Image (cartoon, helix red, strand yellow):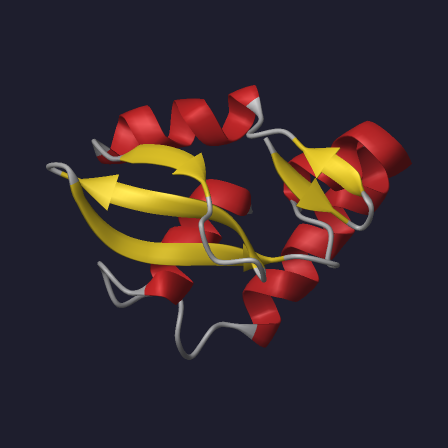
Length: 98
């Protein structure tokens, strides 16, 4: 777990399942400003999820599905220009946290 806004941020089951689908491993980030580190074949490929911001699983847990779905829609719209390039931090943030 990592610290998130004064609390521990758990890597959620949602993110673990998404990581399995992408054939990557996720661990608590060593970067104090990020939530998770993404590894492919044992090599760090990205640190994603800015601390201090919620993500889809967090919104689901704290705000409910309706708000989570709206926040997801807005995130995807806001990041539409950079989240599609496979292997980038933006791609992994989109795939693993949204």
